[in-house]
Amino acid sequence: MVKGKKPFLSSAIWPGIVLGLLSTIPFVNYGNCLCCLWIVGGGFLAALIFKQEWGSITPGEGAIVGLVAGLIGAAVQAVGAGILGYFFRDMYLSSLLEIYSAFEIDMAMQEMMANFIFNPVLLMTITLVSSLIANSIFATVGGLIGGAVFKEKQSPAPPAAPPEFDQDELDK
Image 1 (tube, rainbow, N blue to C red):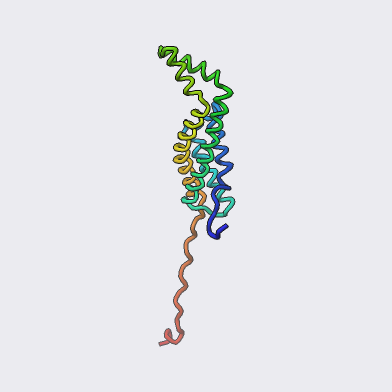
Image 2: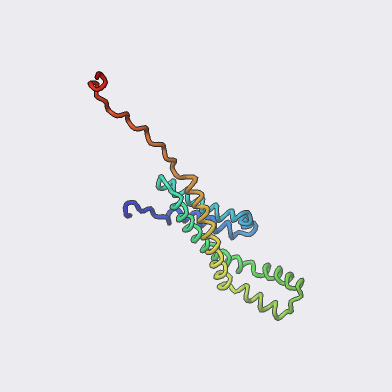
């Protein structure tokens, strides 16, 4: 390791995995409706872990480690979406068909849209791209906030010593 350089990946792996899982698990993922709670929280957690590993953090370092955590989380979300889409395809499809019938979309169009939406590669790609964008922004904000919160407070400089004086000067 080059002196003065701090690796961000080691501090961002677990927060990225956690934010990706929380953003993927059904019903738990609704936490992101509250100002992207899990994504911002993942960036904030990455900044905390970085501070614990290295002893100090700046807001800029917090932003970088938050960004890395967000990118890791996006990958986890894409894989999670593919897995959930595979296992719960029938349930999602029946819900989707109910929505289609409410809007009176013809059957051929419904089938085409369902096949398009439930293509696992397409689903993972769309999830990855959208998560990369959202996580990059909001996890960076979380890391920036964490860096500002956890940065070391600068103690004020001690007062300057009084100038030296010569006793002979005072006697005159």
